[in-house]
Length: 254
Image (cartoon, rainbow, N blue to C red):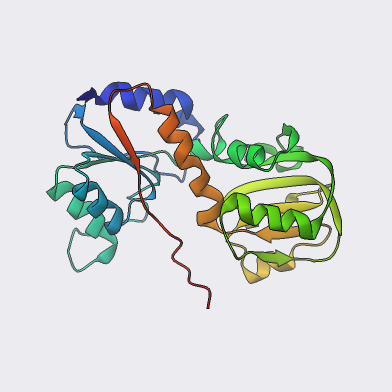
């Protein structure tokens, strides 16, 4: 057994809660007063399947990136599929903690991890995004690269077979790249002086905003699951087993 407070302190030192956006719901989602942890399951999203994985593996703590409780809940009912994970977790004495936008923006968090995986140099915050810039990183490839070659490498890095490419072929060779993991399409009109933006959840009208650079929609799931090994490594100092949940994107490409 490991002290729960020490685990949460470690996470919050890495991803301080004050970095979370006002609209976010990072922090405790289900706290039942249990102060010891025997096994932890780390997940991107605390779905019903993830809770069932926790039960199967005797985990009594789930640490997720996306908050389990986000939208307003009017009642707790098994007729509402959205709250089934919440009900199942409570029934099985499983506590749930989420680190969301604070983990996106912190040093070494989701945005930094993606930039590092891409081998970007001179990584910084994009000035033109002002206060929103902590969700984004801008850096440069060591050398200019053909966009087609870069895309093949990106697919391998993110372990995906499908991406969406917008505003191609504005630049056949690229060097300066912005990354906004998850859903960063709303920032497209604000970005300048880059060759490519990598993000997820680009909707039709967002795509129309891309004018001076290419946009790669590599997927919300694909650009954020990269942080799960970071969390596992963060907790490696504790004498508790940490598992990463088996998850997949909800989209099926036919």
